Image (cartoon, rainbow, N blue to C red):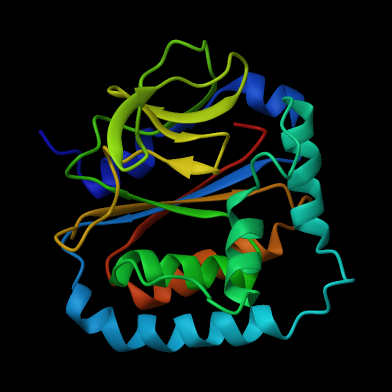
Amino acid sequence: MRIAAEEWVARSTVDPGVHDRWPGYQAILLAADDVDVIRLVPIADMLFAQAHADARSLDSNDADEHIARWHQAFRDFGIKPRVARVSVDALVRRAASDDGLPRINVLVDLYNAISILHRVPVGGEDLDRYRGPARLVLAAGDEPFHTTAHGEPIVDHPDQGEPVWVDEGGVTCRRWNWRQATRTAIDEQTTGVGFILDSLDAPDHLGARRAAEQLAELIPNVHTRTIRVTE
């Protein structure tokens, strides 16, 4: 049975072990049932173009402080940036390239654009495919992760101690926000959606807050919650 947006937001958690290792971390969750995707088409098109223009205007010598914090967090659990980049870094780099970002679908294009514009990792999940609430945990290493390799579906597993978002069916996103599972991915039929904004931009988390505010303005009847280190 599908979890309702309000329940998904209210019941999702961050394991204390994550906050023990990265006390500056904060998550913002937003979710909505029955999203009017058609209404979002021109908005996604506009933001997608803005995101590309923004990425291409950057000076390659200017390092983003929030992205730099994510690089260090990835190193903390043994991953160098060139091996696996935090999602927002990968998006900015690709948007700045000659080829640009590929179009995926309206909701994915929308949150990818907002991620770039506010320099914060944003993930989106199809709540019809989600099993229970979201949990950010340090992986045991045996959790199933549904993905693809060479165009074929496979089941992989995270590294032990790696921060992963999970539901009752396994990993929904590896390495915090590096790669999302195919099992819960948003597609053209998605209308019940959950967004996860990961932030290490303590103490103010300005980029995440502004990204969450923009999503809330664009999607009516959205439920939102911030999970802080003190919870």
